Length: 361
Length: 158
Image (cartoon, rainbow over all chains, first blue to last red; front, side, top):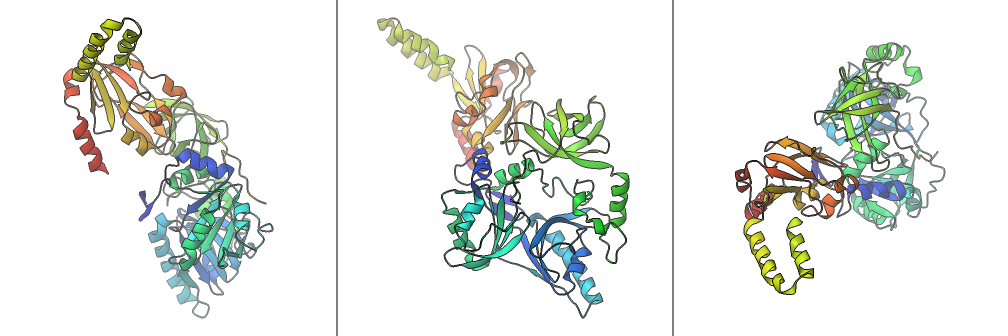
């Protein structure tokens, strides 16, 4: 068990090592207890506009029961948190944010909401944090088969990025099921009412194909999938353009609009003229490069960036990493040197994801 | 380990001399080969007859690291001072530096670990040894933790 965002969380379960747990998710089905993450609901006729004032996504063009990865931004265009926003209708949104950012996120919502509701007194937005609700991530090629065995709701028509309310388990508990996850595999994130969280967790984990998976494998799986971890690969100084997340900035949000997103001028400037640094993937020869390792150009003389996450990849057997380099040194195939334990190691810029994603589409 | 090799060879040769030789060896090893530990969860097994200390990580350390996937060891012949970082043991989740528990010259490294880093998990105190150091300051060894002190140290860090 390790302390994590104020919670005590398992790095692994029982005697199952990180590599075995990791491989189990890639070949079968793994269950992650991610109930520490914050689940929010925004409702009211102006809730879409309210969220548009905080993030750069095209929420208008999102169909009902569809989710998108997004970022909440500060006035300088830096990322306050990354998030999954699910639209149920234009007046109801389900939002999941990082536990490690709960203080900053809640402060941001509180401040923005007081201002918003004071300006729109007849159309107030209601914000609820789903306290005590469970959140499970079932991930891996067998996750659909496993979950289907516990619900009468067909999952066949639910594609990656879509969600549905399904009655799960012997007590037919209504849960929010979103297809997606943080591993690159097919899978679901299941939001469960507080009183039923334990029984449903037990029912899913009792399935013979399912293993409980801790934080250790969660990190190696997401890194292979090229996904960011806030506090490591993202922080309040980094813009979505620098982070390689320009795709979350909706095309229709890049022109002048009634409700601009925070930091829009910097972000538009970076979109047209390139940012000063960019997040890229690396493969490193010799030793794994970890967070904080310096990145140099091919000659080894000029420092050009820093590693933000790195591991020996259990799936590939090579050392993979992500980090930031100055613009111009970011292209796929660029040779670099990475300093690990005072020795420069050969590295190369690689495209991400490192392991191809297998989403259900 | 090298201590046991003459013992086994003698068993297969002469019958009468075995007993004396075996006993002698056992007594010597009991008296002289000792294992001590560092607060960084490394062990050193010191043979004063050759002045060589075999270095490894403890069972406590391998459990804390998880599956070891990569080991970086110092070059043979390099001179190290006590507490110098001389390499690293890496699992998927973390890298852990190896510090020289004693000063001296690296005499040999465990080459098997490059192909089988998992030996560190399976046999941290024996087949998963990391390096042999020819001690330049044998008194440093005597100042390391004995069994009892190391056990207390582990209990204190839990």
